[in-house]
Structure formats: C-alpha cells, structure tokens
Length: 475
Image (cartoon, rainbow, N blue to C red; front, side, top):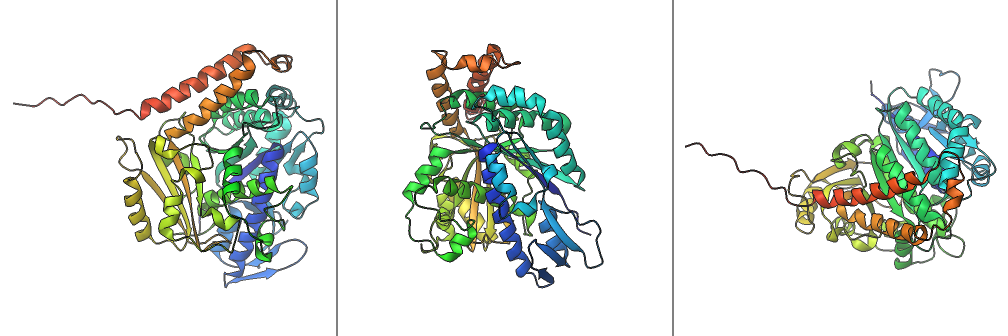
C-alpha cells in the first residue's frame, strides 16, 4: 500500500485568502487534468466533484491536500472532496465571496473563522486582541483538520505582512502551531508590501511580524509586491485566449482592476510548484518537509527567495516556448526574482530546483554545473543543490522550474524594512495606536528591531570564509 502524507493550508487575512482561493481553484483544475489523463479513473461530473476512482496515484494526488467527507466508502470508493484548509479573516468581505464562489463546495462552515470589524491595519490588534479572543476557535478548527490526517506532513501558512489581520493574527497563529504541534514543519508564504503601499502603518506591521515569523517558522518564502508589479510590467502583454481565461478563474490577467489577480496568480503558481512533489508522482519528488531540512542550514536563516520560470507562460500563451537551458538561466536573473534583490550580489547557502514536466536528469546536471560557475556559493557547503523532478507538468507549459534559494541577498529586504520603520518611529508617529492595545509594549518594538539587525548580521557572517585551524603534522 502507498503511504500518504497530508498537509494543511492556513489562509489568514484578505491577501492570504485571495491567494488561497486562487491556489485551490488551480489545484482543482490540475487534479481534473490528472484524472482525465489517468486511464483507470472515471469522472462523475455534477454540481460537486465526486469521483469514482481506482488507482493509488489518484489517491495520493487527492489525499495530500484534499480529504473525503463522504460518510461511508463503498466498494467503488466514491469521493466527495474538501480542501485541507482553515480560512481565517477578521473581515467578512473576502470570505463571503469565497463561501459563495465557484469553489465554495471545497470548504465547510467548520473550516471558516471570521469576524466583521477588522484589525484596522494594526498588528497589535490582530496579534493580541483577536489572537486572544479567537485562540480557542482557531486551534479547534486546525485540530479538526489535523484529525482528518493519517500522516500529517506539514502546515502551509499564507498571509501578508503589511495589514493588521495578516501580519498580526497570522504571526500569532504561527505561535499557536509551534506550541500545539512543535514537531510538524511550518512553511510560510509571506507577502511583503511595496514602498508605495497605501497602508500607512505597514512599516510597523512588517517589522513586528517578521520578528515572530523568524522565530517560529521552519521555512519562509517571502514575496514582495513591488517585485511582482515590476515583473508584470516588464513582460509583454497580448490578448489572452479562452484557455488562459479558464486557467485563471475566468478572469483576464491584464487591464484595469485586474492587477491583484495577476499578482495572486503568480503566487498561487509558486504554491503549485512547491506542492507538486507532494501531489503527483515523479522520479525525484521533494515533499514539503524536505524543504526546511535541505535548504535551511540554521534555524533563523530560513528565508528562501523564489523565482518561477517560464513566467511568460502565466501572461501570454502566444509567446514562443522557452528552452530548458533558458529556463535555468531565468531563475538566477535579477529581474525575475519575486523579491527586489540581486542574487549575484549575495552568496548562496543552498538552492532548491523543483522541476515539473519533461525535464531530464541529464539537463538538470548540465545546467547545475553551468550555473555553479555563474553564482557564488558558500565554501563550507559542497552539496549546493536540492533537485526535485515531478513528472506531471503544469497546465500552461510542458516543463517549468521553481528556484528556492537561501541567499544572503535577502538582507536587502530586511534593510528596507528597518529603513521604512525608522522613518515613522523616529517621530513616534501612529505608535500610540499600538500601545493602546492590551499586551503591547514598547520593548517588543525595540526587540523586533534588534532581532532584524541581528538577522542581517547572521547572514553576513555565514558568507565569510571559515578559517580553520591547521592540523598538526606528526614527525
């Protein structure tokens, strides 16, 4: 029998739930494609996806991120699937649209925790006020999802770092997970605001949330809004055909009012790649729990810069197909990183290369040998690459690649956070809104600044050559 591991996705705040909704829609579409391409599977189409299945491959693809909520299983093994997810927000808007949208059948009421007043773009309100009052409800919802898992592999947390609920309550939930499930890996996809963000207090929220995430996450994939906007602006835009519209929730990825849909689509596709090794078969699959084990050499140095190639496939099907060699070159390009950073200005501690589709091991070996000559790796790590090969391609391209790099260039993000924070804090602007919340103290702000400064110093220290003591020679 096939041993199956399950993962639970926790979506927090407006940003986290919008990305999560896009991910579940695309994951369901990929699952449908996988079903149709599997000979021993028959699909019973209806208002809700109910599958009559035979085959361990399908069982594995379903059970990783979906669960069967049918009361009994017949000999034909009928599946009425639900997402392994918990949806949390302190405003009703986004969650109401999810509950009434085209993927509402994936979620039950017990998976949704919401309020109506919001956090007011205040980290302290989300972290302490809502974190205390909703603690039992949130832990209970997560515990119920865990009980549906035969072999829990990890948690995947989606949230933003600039708002109140995403940064405050999202980071508090990370503490809950560390306390309640200390031995289960915690992966975080954190969306960082741009410098032109319309939330005035986002510098405070980002700093405070980053401190908590650094302490309690096993691996963090930071994504910066400004980097996504620059990428979308630089890529050519042409008229999208019907196939592309179906892939992206029936919405075009360009035009006025669609900016955030475009950004969310890119982030959701990053999630699809990260989780593909857990969902589908492959010669060298990488499960979620392998990512922190192989790519995080020290607990605090857990930030992984990501780059997806070919990104053009997310914006225009009419563009010519990128070659495999060009795809590997793209993932080290400064212009295509999902953070505003230059990997050539930093040093690689480790790097994961997660391939999907028609990518041969010989192509991987050739290109990793070539890339090793172009980038800088630390001298104390000889096993630089963690390679994953998933045989099931994405819907948009016969082959694709996601790079997850633990690179010291991530310190440029931390430096920008500190700079934006001091512009407000030197005037003590808006700080009274935070200190009015019960549990929030000035010392926590100062500790967060010191923690981020230390994190920058830690990254700088590991890239310096290690001076070893010469061995004594016997006469």
